[in-house]
Image (cartoon, rainbow, N blue to C red; front, side, top):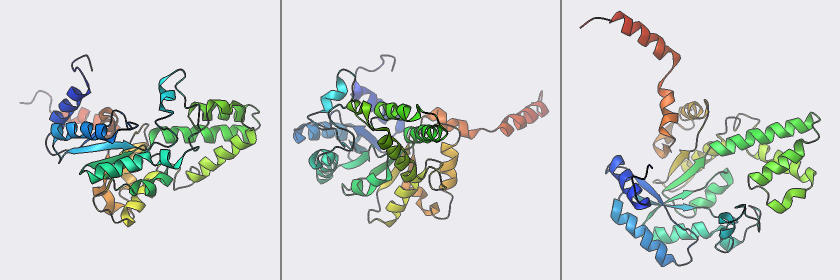
Length: 292
């Protein structure tokens, strides 16, 4: 940030100042894999003092196949998780984030349970009593388009399409590096399952919002009245307009108060404008030209 701030704490303090006293502020733990919960509590307490108990929300991630024992792989060399595929998890490792969220909840903190990309993560995340859950859109939608495109190329006779899909799965952490010789039939099966699960070829998910629809339905039926949904990570001309339309549908119109939409300011700003804004401003400004 132009070397204006010395460290993360100064950045967070400035964010708090800009947002003002009435806004929740989610803060990310420096190391959610810290084995000493006392140190995590110390870090959380620092932010509670900075923002007050009424504003601070501690961000806790799903951890999946990443554990204290293998997290170092993400920091060295090719920075890939070589020891495990994303679904090769231990119970304790995969539920680490849930346990951390519950401990923080027991110590009086509200929790933003993050890294929620697939609908099947939601009900499990709610077991941790979070204040926020999340729906990430951008990367999942882009990946779905790529998977669908390569499968269609394969069906149309492109003999290298499944090899490209296998490479894509490795690059995007569906597979680990040692899966470079994964049987192409299995590669195709995974691709087809993802497209089907994400409803990417029907009205529930062709816009990439199947996860958001699912999460709103789960929130509507659960007994956690204060839990809200953060919708984040958007791109392209359709994401926000599709969300806007979805929230006006009869099924979801009563859930608007449960939704927090976050995006880069410039992304949202574009949707204040249309071509007719330019056309009418031309007319207005020329009509008023020279008038006091």
